Amino acid sequence: MSEQRPRPRAFRLDDAKVALDDIPARAATSVIVESEPAPIPAETRAATIDAAERDIEIAQQRGILNRWRVNLASVVWSGIGGLVSLAIGLWVTQLIEGLFARANALGWVGLAFGALALAGIVAIAVREILAISRQSRIALLHAALAQARAKDDRDDARALVTRLAALYETRPGMASARAQTLEAARAIIDGRDLIDIAERTLLRPLDARAQGEIAAAAKRVSMVTAISPRAILDLLFVIAQIIRLVRRIAEIYGGRPGLLGFFKLARSIGAHIAITGGLAVGDSLLQQLVGHGIASKISARLGEGVLNGLLTARVGLSALAVCRPAPFAATKPPGIADVAPFLFGGGKDG
Image (tube, rainbow, N blue to C red):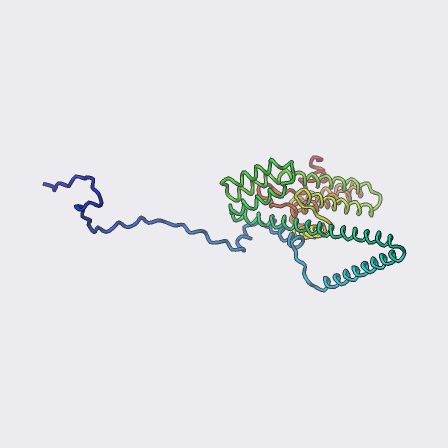
């Protein structure tokens, strides 16, 4: 006959009749703790970014983000600039002294004009510094967004997307796009997806405007140089259109380049063309050669117009890549056949 087990009943822990048995406690349930992933080395992160994006970052570093390097050329130009400044200052001083010698009223008028000119120079210098600083911030934001997307870092992506939206807070037409982007940044979204959403929402309309500017400039250059009677006029017109196009694209994406800022931006664009020139036109190189050959057979001037239009479009695409505050990820970067199909004769004349 089996032993009868006692029936369970309630009791108080502080009851004196309750005896505690020294029963070893059960082993604690094992818990698996996942450690945070080790940080990815810089070399590995760089390998996850495509070659085109690395080329853009290199071009930006050579132009907008470059630091002044002390060399013999900079020393020589610094000395020449100092001498010219001293000569201008001495000439202005002698002019004002001569005006005071003739009449006190003329001296005070000359001094007022001098102060006005000095204030204008200081204002221009401040504007140039702010413009260069803004372009540098855009270039740094571009590189940071590329790294955050490669790492799929949600926290970095949120902070960077907020900075990207802040670039266009003064544009009333982008209020809806900014609101959608900031709302997505507050949601639980992966870093890579958040950057892609910001690119499609904020930058796709700007990309369309920039490509429209490139197409219009390429069309003007190809038409004017095809009918221009003088080569020097062709050269001047092409240079003027390229300068206008670069400044316009920079303004579309949030930059406001002044004189020095334009030179630094032009240096970045030149570096980008030098680095990626062969790759950028590789997909449509055959079309360009065929189109230019047919145009040359019809008319030498028409062939020159097509070639100048291709050059303008190529510079515009490099300016778009350098000035864009985010890398091309959710959308495909445009090519020459996309912005200027009319130069090949096989696309629609946009």
